[in-house]
Image (cartoon, rainbow, N blue to C red; front, side, top):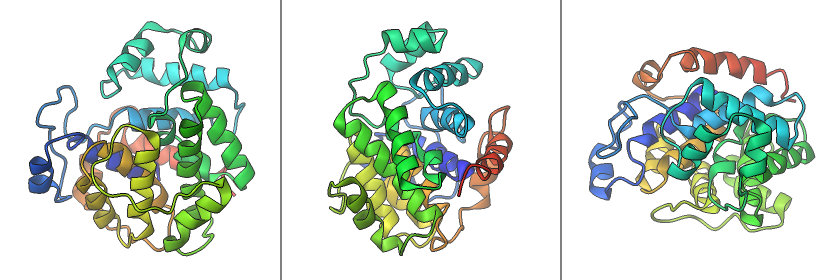
Length: 278
């Protein structure tokens, strides 16, 4: 799952808010591209979506508090600083050196996609109650709003549904709606904006009809807008579904960055996460 979500992130990074014409011309899922205007992210590099997911994955199964989460967010950023974060949050991370300072200074009033994009490992936990609790706690560190928390819970529950085989993939949005008491069944259409609910709804729409990872990735990017986040969320869940063929091109696996916290490290994390899943 960790490798697949990173592939979605890295592939989608080349198309994030890119002109629709660029997306239509190059979204062939054959390999990684350079974004037409963004600098600092090379083809195959993942972004903040994956880096913050690493923090969640490394901490899962240990003490789960706002402070331990904030400490981990600071740790994973400073050990491997990278671009790809929103400008204000990137500057904030550069300026803090501890979880305590993070919590003292953060304004956790966002309803954007940050809490949803990083939550996938939480979905592996054995029960719905555990998934919702862990998803909400981590969301409130940075996105302590009803929409921020709900979108994180929905993204985590999508992984849970697929991982535990709780029903046919086409039923994932209805099942999530039943758990949360909100309607997540309305299909998403068009460009995806920065709100967490937008990215999750788009990811769930694509996931519900997915039959192959390649087609799912192409559909996520075809929305245009914040597509690296959509692809991260959708591929994380699909990687745990028996209904979705694992047919991503070998070029995407080979081309994914493989430094200290790259492809091989992500595979090790997947093995570790198996120990906390039910």
